[in-house]
Length: 378
Image 1 (cartoon, rainbow, N blue to C red):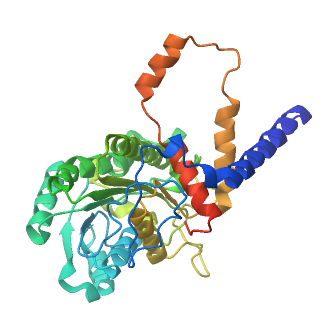
Image 2: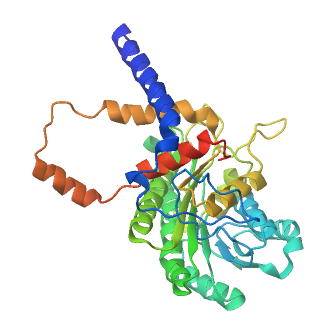
Image 3: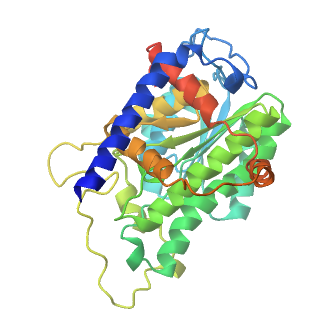
């Protein structure tokens, strides 16, 4: 890196920190136009403390969760089980889906105290007909459904340059198409009872910053973030009483490293005898080191954070403060790439804005910075 490049990098980083300090110092006043389409949330003695009165707010249709029904894909282990435990601890009814019977047997031990508030369904999220049957069974067992948690996912290892068509079809099929299948199937049922609801998708740290050693996985998880941002924008600007949250965890102690056990034969590795890609230089997400205690977050804590994010209708739920500088650098890299020699016409600007539609980023930023300034846990 040249001295000039290093100077630019330092300047961008310093400017980012200055903007952050300015935003945090002025967040308490950010209750103007960015929050004009939002309404105040009701507080609850059983829910997390409501946002400070002078902070921007959003509708919180799932502030009160006791007795509500949630459908959680991949709920028999890892993060999905952590979410199921947190939800049942809060008095919810849950349907968990599973692929591996031994995982289900272990999960039911954790959920035993919930009794008949737990129901399990064997489901492959890429099977749309099976997803429809699972939705029908959920309503038949619990009467309705309020919350969809699209959590099921697989870890496809290896850089994009060595990925096969089968790698791509499997990873995208589960991690992205499975999320859409859930939304397409369950959203009409959530809307039908008029009691409000929430849609959650588990993305990843790899949905916010590129992971070179996990190319297909990164692509699928970035797409999930974009899907949920678009759905959030649609709902918040049209007044639909359904919250939207995307969970982007870092390392959590899960079974994602064993995803290959559920890989369908028709999408088996088609490398034709070629050796698999070399292991990444850093541990893969969710994979504990060979010895010593697993370094990741406990799945129950992850689930509790998802529960709190749902009750507060937070768009993003993150677990990785150690990557704050990387998040900032990515945003600044995009800003630094804005061309200074392009002068769009007013017609072009208007047309582009019409296509993009209303944006919700500033309102979410102002709300969360205000809450941070007030000391609220995220």
